[in-house]
Image 1: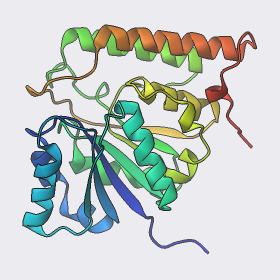
Image 2: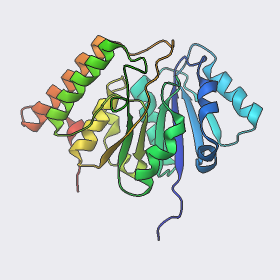
Image 3: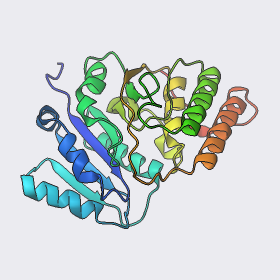
Image 4: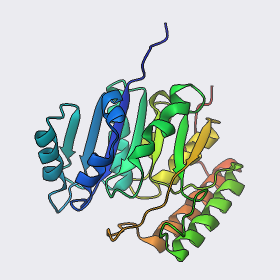
Length: 256
């Protein structure tokens, strides 16, 4: 018997987001607060009062479904996501939407993002800044060029047709996540690309929506050059694995 309602988790990854976490929570639409079973802020051992500010917001507005967790030790960007997705799997959520705590992505579009997953038309959805106006939204030119170069290369290797691989606004079918070897993935920033590669290998349905680009004065924690090199290494590993030259268990996906 089909459930009438999907169990939704809004998962906010946060690190040193004291300037933006309250703004992000305020921007979540009322109908999303109503629909979501839980809004989870995962503070990755911030050195500022990110978690305390989120807890204060919860107390001020008496939001029972807002949960704030502060990790004792920094798990890394990918490690924090793995923790959250395993939480979603363990607690039997159906859909999880991930958004960064820096308020650069639009929580106002959560319903649009998750709709294809709720309707069974997609396993994974994410917001593409590239189909909008990234430069007009303040994306630095060097980041735009790097984003386009890496995305074109990733599409070529994986035989996909995505407009962007590097957005931090994503939604997943949790039952699909449970099929992936997430424990094999990186704890670093290239986790985002690893999981897309796994979804592509598993021939899962991937969709995109257009989102606006916003760059404020928040500090970027992504080491650009190292990030780009890590993506090139991942693609090399995938090609070696596909050619049976070297085995990588993270690319062993059961597609049955």
